[in-house]
Length: 64
Ligand SMILES: [Zn+2]
Image (cartoon, rainbow, N blue to C red; front, side):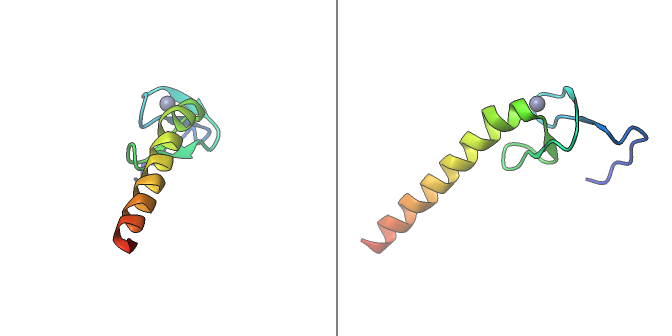
């Protein structure tokens, strides 16, 4: 993702498509690129928690 924009303070969210200000968050694994605060809290964080839980469950199964 190397899109050069003149207005470096505004970004388009990779998840909801809305324009947001500031740094934003890495949207992966939900979407490539970056996303807004709202999508990060509502989509990216729960998905990451689920990934961690799944990975731990897998590791537990392998160990037992
Ligand atoms: Zn968003």
